[in-house]
Image (tube, rainbow, N blue to C red; front, side, top):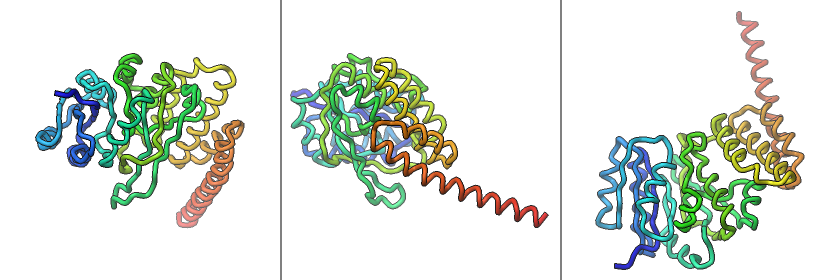
Length: 311
């Protein structure tokens, strides 16, 4: 029997309903030589039943373990159980278009890691409203990632298994939960520059109000942890560029959290970047954040005046 070309790794936790669409997208693939490993992080819903329902259509393995609290450990368990030379990552609430594996297969001889764009669908009415565009990373890829930021959607990645083993797979560090994928790309970029970008949407995901990567102080701390873990490898100039990029990302997070005054402080710092896109975005976001900051102050002032008159 021909061994599978790809091992598709799906970590999951209480996502039975969405997992069904994910697995169906694999059953619909035009390229068929792959195995699927669902690594269940202690689900208490109908996940096992959903997986079993696809046993006739897919070459499936199901791994159940006690809840760890993030995708790193289940992904690592699935990687250890895999038999293909190429590992594909797919989150259980995401899905691929039918030609995904067929297209990726064409590039296996020229890269160590392959990735592509993904479409984003509205969570409520399931309407496509945006394309999450990646970019071709340039050597040295490690510096590109550190000074220009994340560029890879996890569910788009296909990577050589021996590369994952070489870098120690995903870090099982709770301070990196939700950013362990970015940490992995950085680790991989320290051993190879053979990153290949397919400028095409080959999969999709939905917006999710419960996503652990939503803007928050915890998420800011996680990204700081990633950068601080790797920044010592940069020279002084690139270290400054990386720190200014961090300021921009923190500003964006603070803005999404509606902490506009704090966001403005970080955007002013990121204006020092020599990346003109970051500089222009920072200028625009300072204006937008200032407007909302003043608007909120005005609303608060009017409310305070109203209460004084009433009481």
